Length: 89
Image (cartoon, rainbow, N blue to C red; front, side):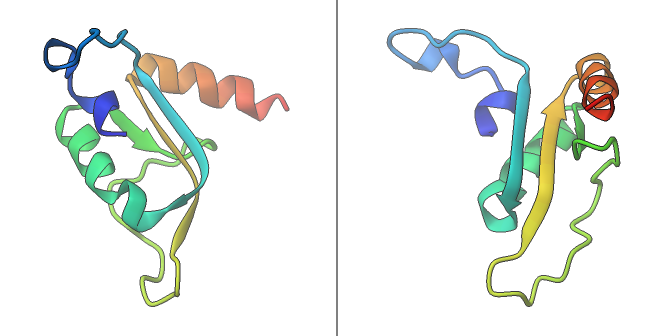
């Protein structure tokens, strides 16, 4: 998820290809929280596959494994397209 937010290509060998999308269903909060924060700080859309923005962790954190239903990180335009297409399913 961190690679979604920042360009680390100059530090990899071979250079990694660019991409601008992260989507995962049943994302464990602790596996995604840092990347979600970085993406939000970088100005990317952070939300879920249904189009609800995720500007805060709004689920109970006292669960054994707190999980988001889905996590979507992308540019605003790409996220909008994905949400529209996903709603057609």
